[in-house]
Image (cartoon, rainbow, N blue to C red; front, side, top):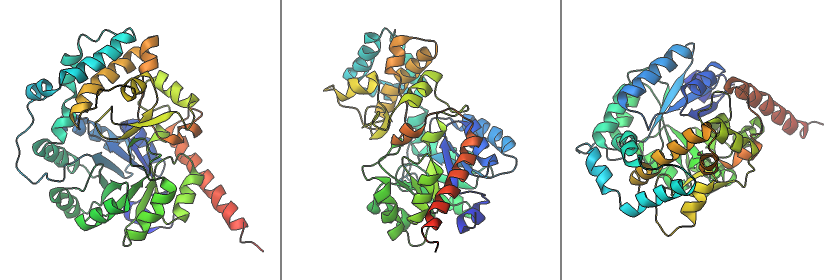
Length: 375
């Protein structure tokens, strides 16, 4: 595509694929888009292993990394002690998570031990841990690095710009965009309320032109509910330079959720998602399930990030594992982050085919618009 962003990043088509699955990342990059690996739950060594695999499987095509790096990374700080973090979790939240599982026939006796395996998220938001992740990421020829929550710290910007790597940041309002521009971010991702995962309340249709209006010429990627090429074309008609998509890859053959969760997504409508703090402590959109309904109907308040993640993720990982083995109660509880575009995700295909479908649908949309201008 004839655009400055495509030329700068070496892309055929400005479709950015956020995924926790390395297979999706590599497949999208090979197909002409740009796969962006979501790495927040990994240790530095695990990140290195994943990026080694991606680098060996993209056929020389560009790829990126998405992290959650705290704004005050430059400040001094000791790493979080795992035992202290676990002991700091209030008993009522832990007990509530256990009650939900047991009410659906799941043995929750080992949750505390499992929580010790889910502290990478907390450590990666600590100054020392985040810096280690940055050092690993920049030891590879990444073409983009994204910060998913808040303005990136100066050290992240400096490390990226020294290597000629643009920094992207997700924003949910005009105010957020202005702060990111002041910080020195190169690419803005306008993440509308339809998006899966962490998102705000403003719809993509409204947010995209708002962010473009204050972007000062910086590229804006539209995100939130976009799962087709025609939606991408609509976003670009509003001034976006491309699309940032996460949900559409979840039901692909390579997508990371267990098959029962994919099946629930394939059957879901756009009304079958909910924004809730119950998974991470910040509002994130996910598939409705007995788990989300239990938290939404309870007086137990979710904890701040990252504590709520340590409460919820081990329990949800257990439900996903058991759901994959056919456990009915676990299947009812099983959920995953997904946007409202899930209502358009009705069949399983490969990630590479999704990119090709986007291209065809995009061109068809452009032809329809051009037809209105013909004499």
